[in-house]
Image (cartoon, rainbow, N blue to C red; front, side, top):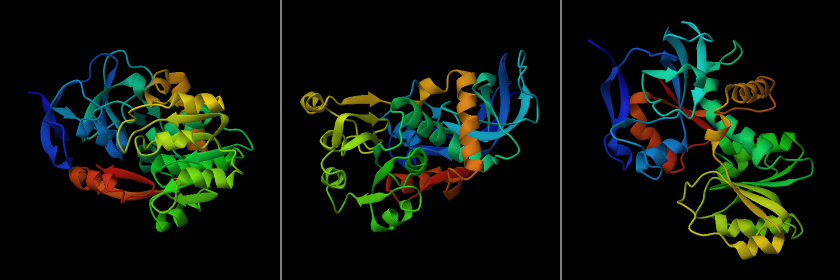
Length: 326
């Protein structure tokens, strides 16, 4: 008789209410796999996109969730880098919304004593996203002007701080005066409430009409086209999400006039190689430990209350990072 575990699973895509807290089977770990008991699971907007159908899944029913931390309970044949009892984290592997899961060992990141499970589950996906954005998609340099959309979110707060630590001037868009005051404490030099001001005009005003060297855009439809209008010459707009919907078209004329460019970001390609991924994660956790990056976990939910968590996230009622306690 196979073992079982409880998980949040969807049988169809749609509103938060399609998520069900139910019992599912748990097989034995196969070659190269481990059985992981989650202690904390991360909440990320990619989970919303999977649940809604914006990012199609290969099959249904499916356990969603792309990030978690916990303790290895059993290892399969051929696993040499981990043993039972090791604390680990991971991201970009579907199936995190569960008490236990089977996962390939080469997708795991070892955790040191200085990194708690809560920090790991809140920061692995969002922090590694911020890492590739400021180091790969556009290597931020001292003196750059950086525009961060959704600056009060988990990735947004880390982006503001990381860019500031690299010597950039940071402009961030937020949805309320309260969030503007909040992000000002996390490296954002000029918070812009997009509901009150035209962010593109404000960027040009703040830069003497020069524009932003790089725009990090996880919003998509509502911000993309306008963002092109406030890029600096030879600047870059990095699209790495679509919380407001997909981008329908790109103005090549607007880009050409500035010799500017667009890059589409995706964390998945940056966490495939274990050596690169573990090195980047070690830097991330070290910067959190020494205070260069302040991680704010402002929402904690029981995993069984995923409906509430998704509702609050999509209604933009959250700030910083959110986690599920398992």
